[in-house]
Length: 112
Image (cartoon, rainbow, N blue to C red; front, side, top):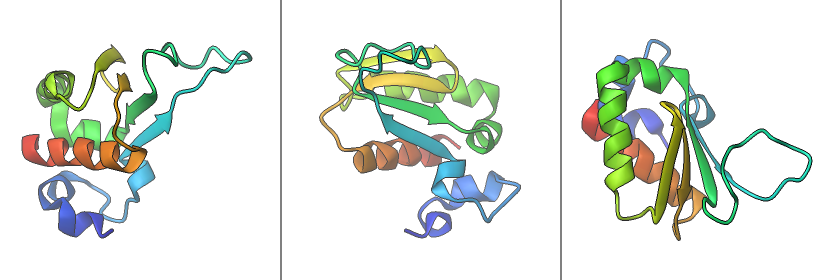
């Protein structure tokens, strides 16, 4: 996937145009891990954890990050949504990891 072609508004705002997807955001499956206190999300309530990386945060700015968070919260794709920080969300969804990634990037592109 050519990210720059798919998300031209976002890439226009990025300082480094050579970024990879993992430099923009991470969508990870949330699972029960008895040895870690890393995530604050109950794996039964939130099956994915979304982290919005610094380049996207800078491209959006503080006010638009708040708007972005509200739009994700209100999105019907998420049964549960919890933002523990401005850049870290727990979600429950029937979508795949790839579909959530696309949804999040599409939302960023719309707002930026």
